[in-house]
Length: 257
Ligand code: NDP
Image 1: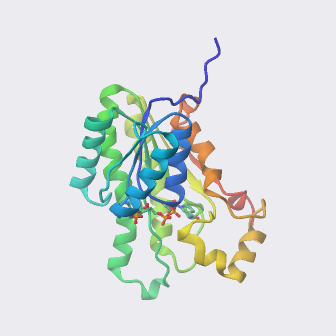
Image 2 (image 1 turned 120 degrees about the vertical axis):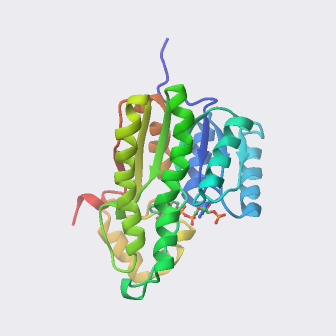
Protein backbone atom coordinates (compact mmCIF):
# COMPACT_ATOMS: atom_id res chain seq x y z
CA UNK A 1 0.00 0.00 0.00
CA UNK A 2 1.40 3.41 -0.89
CA UNK A 3 1.00 6.15 1.67
CA UNK A 4 0.13 9.63 0.44
CA UNK A 5 2.41 11.81 2.54
CA UNK A 6 0.47 14.90 1.51
CA UNK A 7 -2.88 13.54 2.69
CA UNK A 8 -4.53 15.99 5.10
CA UNK A 9 -8.08 14.59 4.85
CA UNK A 10 -10.27 15.58 7.79
CA UNK A 11 -7.53 17.52 9.55
CA UNK A 12 -8.87 20.74 11.03
CA UNK A 13 -7.03 23.86 9.83
CA UNK A 14 -7.54 27.43 11.04
CA UNK A 15 -6.32 30.09 8.61
CA UNK A 16 -6.31 33.62 10.05
CA UNK A 17 -7.13 36.48 7.68
CA UNK A 18 -8.65 34.13 5.14
CA UNK A 19 -11.66 36.17 3.99
CA UNK A 20 -9.57 37.29 0.98
CA UNK A 21 -6.14 37.28 -0.63
CA UNK A 22 -3.42 34.78 0.22
CA UNK A 23 -5.26 33.43 3.27
CA UNK A 24 -8.34 32.63 1.20
CA UNK A 25 -6.21 30.84 -1.40
CA UNK A 26 -4.46 28.79 1.30
CA UNK A 27 -7.84 27.95 2.87
CA UNK A 28 -9.21 26.84 -0.51
CA UNK A 29 -6.04 24.80 -1.20
CA UNK A 30 -6.17 23.03 2.18
CA UNK A 31 -9.89 22.29 1.64
CA UNK A 32 -9.16 20.91 -1.83
CA UNK A 33 -6.55 18.64 -0.22
CA UNK A 34 -9.27 17.33 2.13
CA UNK A 35 -8.92 19.46 5.25
CA UNK A 36 -11.79 20.86 7.31
CA UNK A 37 -11.12 24.59 7.20
CA UNK A 38 -11.99 27.38 9.63
CA UNK A 39 -11.88 30.82 8.03
CA UNK A 40 -11.17 33.99 9.98
CA UNK A 41 -11.22 37.75 9.43
CA UNK A 42 -12.58 40.92 10.99
CA UNK A 43 -15.32 42.01 8.59
CA UNK A 44 -18.17 39.58 9.27
CA UNK A 45 -19.96 40.21 6.00
CA UNK A 46 -16.88 39.56 3.87
CA UNK A 47 -16.06 36.49 5.96
CA UNK A 48 -19.56 35.08 5.51
CA UNK A 49 -19.32 35.69 1.75
CA UNK A 50 -16.10 33.67 1.60
CA UNK A 51 -17.53 30.95 3.81
CA UNK A 52 -20.57 30.60 1.56
CA UNK A 53 -18.38 30.55 -1.57
CA UNK A 54 -16.07 27.81 -0.26
CA UNK A 55 -18.96 25.87 1.31
CA UNK A 56 -20.60 25.73 -2.13
CA UNK A 57 -17.34 24.33 -3.51
CA UNK A 58 -16.43 21.82 -0.78
CA UNK A 59 -19.61 21.28 1.30
CA UNK A 60 -20.83 23.15 4.38
CA UNK A 61 -19.50 20.40 6.67
CA UNK A 62 -15.95 21.20 5.48
CA UNK A 63 -15.96 25.00 5.79
CA UNK A 64 -16.47 26.99 9.00
CA UNK A 65 -15.91 30.65 9.83
CA UNK A 66 -15.17 32.52 13.03
CA UNK A 67 -14.62 36.27 13.08
CA UNK A 68 -12.19 37.45 15.73
CA UNK A 69 -9.44 40.02 16.11
CA UNK A 70 -6.10 38.20 16.10
CA UNK A 71 -4.47 41.10 17.97
CA UNK A 72 -6.72 40.58 20.99
CA UNK A 73 -5.40 37.96 23.42
CA UNK A 74 -8.83 37.05 24.82
CA UNK A 75 -10.42 36.92 21.35
CA UNK A 76 -7.60 34.65 20.12
CA UNK A 77 -8.10 32.30 23.10
CA UNK A 78 -11.87 32.26 22.59
CA UNK A 79 -11.47 31.73 18.83
CA UNK A 80 -9.18 28.72 19.22
CA UNK A 81 -11.38 27.29 22.00
CA UNK A 82 -14.40 27.63 19.67
CA UNK A 83 -12.60 25.68 16.93
CA UNK A 84 -11.68 22.88 19.35
CA UNK A 85 -15.22 22.72 20.73
CA UNK A 86 -17.34 23.19 17.62
CA UNK A 87 -15.18 21.84 14.78
CA UNK A 88 -12.60 19.45 16.18
CA UNK A 89 -8.99 19.12 17.29
CA UNK A 90 -6.93 21.84 15.65
CA UNK A 91 -4.22 20.20 13.55
CA UNK A 92 -3.00 23.09 11.41
CA UNK A 93 -2.77 26.80 12.20
CA UNK A 94 -1.82 29.27 9.48
CA UNK A 95 -0.95 32.68 10.96
CA UNK A 96 -1.68 34.73 7.85
CA UNK A 97 -3.56 37.89 8.93
CA UNK A 98 -1.52 40.96 8.15
CA UNK A 99 -1.55 44.61 7.17
CA UNK A 100 0.74 46.98 5.31
CA UNK A 101 1.29 50.68 6.03
CA UNK A 102 3.47 52.74 3.70
CA UNK A 103 4.98 55.98 5.02
CA UNK A 104 8.55 57.26 5.42
CA UNK A 105 9.90 56.44 8.88
CA UNK A 106 10.40 60.11 9.82
CA UNK A 107 6.65 60.62 9.36
CA UNK A 108 5.57 57.35 10.97
CA UNK A 109 3.17 57.64 13.91
CA UNK A 110 3.93 55.34 16.82
CA UNK A 111 0.30 54.15 16.75
CA UNK A 112 0.79 52.91 13.19
CA UNK A 113 4.09 51.25 14.07
CA UNK A 114 2.36 49.43 16.93
CA UNK A 115 -0.73 48.52 14.89
CA UNK A 116 1.38 46.85 12.18
CA UNK A 117 3.58 45.03 14.72
CA UNK A 118 0.50 43.85 16.62
CA UNK A 119 -1.34 42.64 13.52
CA UNK A 120 1.60 40.98 11.76
CA UNK A 121 3.71 39.66 14.65
CA UNK A 122 2.01 39.75 18.07
CA UNK A 123 -1.02 38.01 16.52
CA UNK A 124 1.11 35.00 15.53
CA UNK A 125 2.33 34.73 19.12
CA UNK A 126 -1.20 35.07 20.54
CA UNK A 127 -3.02 32.65 18.23
CA UNK A 128 0.03 30.35 17.99
CA UNK A 129 0.27 30.05 21.76
CA UNK A 130 -3.42 29.17 22.12
CA UNK A 131 -3.16 26.59 19.32
CA UNK A 132 0.00 25.13 20.85
CA UNK A 133 -1.70 24.63 24.24
CA UNK A 134 -4.04 22.11 22.54
CA UNK A 135 -1.54 20.66 20.04
CA UNK A 136 1.06 19.91 22.74
CA UNK A 137 -1.48 17.84 24.70
CA UNK A 138 -1.93 15.68 21.58
CA UNK A 139 1.78 15.63 20.70
CA UNK A 140 1.15 16.81 17.14
CA UNK A 141 0.38 19.94 15.16
CA UNK A 142 1.55 22.23 12.38
CA UNK A 143 1.94 25.98 12.63
CA UNK A 144 2.67 27.91 9.45
CA UNK A 145 3.55 31.58 9.92
CA UNK A 146 3.27 33.83 6.88
CA UNK A 147 6.44 35.86 6.49
CA UNK A 148 7.52 37.86 3.40
CA UNK A 149 10.58 38.70 1.32
CA UNK A 150 10.74 41.58 3.81
CA UNK A 151 11.78 38.95 6.34
CA UNK A 152 15.17 39.23 4.62
CA UNK A 153 15.08 42.46 2.63
CA UNK A 154 14.20 46.08 3.41
CA UNK A 155 12.68 48.84 1.30
CA UNK A 156 11.99 52.47 2.14
CA UNK A 157 8.57 53.42 3.62
CA UNK A 158 7.63 50.04 5.13
CA UNK A 159 9.68 49.95 8.36
CA UNK A 160 7.06 48.41 10.67
CA UNK A 161 6.16 45.77 8.09
CA UNK A 162 9.84 44.86 7.59
CA UNK A 163 10.41 44.70 11.35
CA UNK A 164 7.31 42.56 11.84
CA UNK A 165 8.23 40.09 9.10
CA UNK A 166 11.81 39.82 10.36
CA UNK A 167 10.24 39.11 13.74
CA UNK A 168 8.15 36.32 12.21
CA UNK A 169 11.37 34.52 11.24
CA UNK A 170 12.64 34.51 14.81
CA UNK A 171 9.22 33.83 16.35
CA UNK A 172 9.13 30.72 14.11
CA UNK A 173 12.51 29.73 15.53
CA UNK A 174 11.45 30.51 19.11
CA UNK A 175 8.32 28.37 18.74
CA UNK A 176 10.50 25.60 17.30
CA UNK A 177 12.95 25.84 20.21
CA UNK A 178 10.13 25.39 22.72
CA UNK A 179 7.63 23.15 20.96
CA UNK A 180 9.41 20.95 18.38
CA UNK A 181 10.19 18.30 21.02
CA UNK A 182 6.44 18.21 21.80
CA UNK A 183 5.72 16.94 18.28
CA UNK A 184 4.88 20.27 16.63
CA UNK A 185 6.39 21.50 13.38
CA UNK A 186 6.50 25.27 13.07
CA UNK A 187 7.68 26.82 9.82
CA UNK A 188 7.17 29.99 7.83
CA UNK A 189 6.26 30.68 4.23
CA UNK A 190 7.75 33.88 2.82
CA UNK A 191 5.82 34.94 -0.27
CA UNK A 192 7.41 37.29 -2.78
CA UNK A 193 5.37 39.98 -4.48
CA UNK A 194 1.92 38.45 -4.89
CA UNK A 195 -0.89 40.10 -6.79
CA UNK A 196 -3.68 40.67 -4.20
CA UNK A 197 -5.81 43.59 -2.97
CA UNK A 198 -2.90 44.55 -0.70
CA UNK A 199 -0.62 45.04 -3.73
CA UNK A 200 -3.11 46.17 -6.41
CA UNK A 201 -1.82 49.76 -6.22
CA UNK A 202 1.73 48.50 -6.87
CA UNK A 203 0.63 46.41 -9.85
CA UNK A 204 -1.11 49.51 -11.24
CA UNK A 205 2.04 51.60 -10.80
CA UNK A 206 3.88 51.18 -14.12
CA UNK A 207 7.34 52.03 -12.78
CA UNK A 208 6.99 49.72 -9.76
CA UNK A 209 5.53 46.93 -11.86
CA UNK A 210 8.41 46.97 -14.33
CA UNK A 211 10.90 47.12 -11.43
CA UNK A 212 9.30 43.97 -9.95
CA UNK A 213 9.46 42.12 -13.26
CA UNK A 214 13.14 43.05 -13.68
CA UNK A 215 13.98 42.23 -10.06
CA UNK A 216 12.34 38.76 -10.15
CA UNK A 217 14.25 35.97 -11.95
CA UNK A 218 10.91 34.30 -12.81
CA UNK A 219 9.91 37.66 -14.40
CA UNK A 220 6.36 37.77 -13.05
CA UNK A 221 4.28 38.59 -9.99
CA UNK A 222 3.35 35.60 -7.87
CA UNK A 223 -0.23 34.40 -7.76
CA UNK A 224 -2.03 33.33 -4.59
CA UNK A 225 -2.11 29.80 -6.03
CA UNK A 226 1.72 29.73 -5.99
CA UNK A 227 1.56 29.63 -2.19
CA UNK A 228 -0.83 26.67 -1.97
CA UNK A 229 1.50 23.72 -2.72
CA UNK A 230 4.09 24.69 -0.10
CA UNK A 231 1.26 25.28 2.42
CA UNK A 232 -0.10 21.75 1.84
CA UNK A 233 3.42 20.37 2.19
CA UNK A 234 3.97 22.17 5.52
CA UNK A 235 0.50 21.12 6.75
CA UNK A 236 1.07 17.45 5.96
CA UNK A 237 3.22 14.53 7.13
CA UNK A 238 5.48 15.21 4.12
CA UNK A 239 7.20 17.86 6.28
CA UNK A 240 7.45 16.01 9.59
CA UNK A 241 11.19 16.70 10.05
CA UNK A 242 11.08 20.28 8.73
CA UNK A 243 11.44 22.54 11.76
CA UNK A 244 11.88 26.28 12.13
CA UNK A 245 12.45 27.02 8.44
CA UNK A 246 11.45 29.97 6.30
CA UNK A 247 10.52 28.84 2.79
CA UNK A 248 10.79 31.68 0.29
CA UNK A 249 8.26 31.51 -2.56
CA UNK A 250 9.36 34.52 -4.51
CA UNK A 251 10.31 33.56 -8.07
CA UNK A 252 13.93 33.78 -6.94
CA UNK A 253 13.86 37.45 -5.82
CA UNK A 254 15.85 36.90 -2.61
CA UNK A 255 18.52 34.86 -4.41
CA UNK A 256 19.76 37.64 -6.71
CA UNK A 257 20.78 41.31 -6.54
P1 NDP B 1 -5.18 41.09 2.28
O1 NDP B 1 -5.12 42.52 2.67
O2 NDP B 1 -5.70 40.72 0.95
O3 NDP B 1 -6.03 40.28 3.41
C1 NDP B 1 -5.73 40.45 4.78
C2 NDP B 1 -6.57 39.52 5.60
O4 NDP B 1 -6.22 39.66 6.98
C3 NDP B 1 -8.06 39.81 5.50
O5 NDP B 1 -8.77 38.60 5.53
C4 NDP B 1 -8.32 40.63 6.78
O6 NDP B 1 -9.65 40.53 7.25
C5 NDP B 1 -7.40 39.93 7.74
N1 NDP B 1 -7.07 40.73 8.93
C6 NDP B 1 -6.41 41.91 8.99
N2 NDP B 1 -6.31 42.31 10.27
C7 NDP B 1 -6.91 41.34 11.03
C8 NDP B 1 -7.15 41.19 12.43
N3 NDP B 1 -6.72 42.10 13.32
N4 NDP B 1 -7.80 40.08 12.86
C9 NDP B 1 -8.24 39.16 11.98
N5 NDP B 1 -8.06 39.26 10.64
C10 NDP B 1 -7.40 40.35 10.18
O7 NDP B 1 -3.70 40.54 2.52
P2 NDP B 1 -2.78 39.52 1.65
O8 NDP B 1 -3.55 38.33 1.26
O9 NDP B 1 -2.07 40.30 0.62
O10 NDP B 1 -1.68 39.14 2.74
C11 NDP B 1 -1.86 38.04 3.62
C12 NDP B 1 -0.57 37.77 4.36
O11 NDP B 1 0.48 37.54 3.42
C13 NDP B 1 -0.09 38.95 5.22
O12 NDP B 1 0.54 38.46 6.39
C14 NDP B 1 0.93 39.63 4.33
O13 NDP B 1 1.88 40.38 5.07
C15 NDP B 1 1.56 38.43 3.66
N6 NDP B 1 2.24 38.73 2.41
C16 NDP B 1 1.56 39.30 1.35
C17 NDP B 1 2.25 39.54 0.16
C18 NDP B 1 1.58 40.11 -1.04
O14 NDP B 1 2.29 40.40 -2.02
N7 NDP B 1 0.28 40.30 -1.05
C19 NDP B 1 3.66 39.22 0.02
C20 NDP B 1 4.26 38.64 1.19
C21 NDP B 1 3.55 38.40 2.33
P3 NDP B 1 -10.78 41.59 6.78
O15 NDP B 1 -11.10 41.22 5.35
O16 NDP B 1 -11.91 41.35 7.72
O17 NDP B 1 -10.17 42.94 6.91
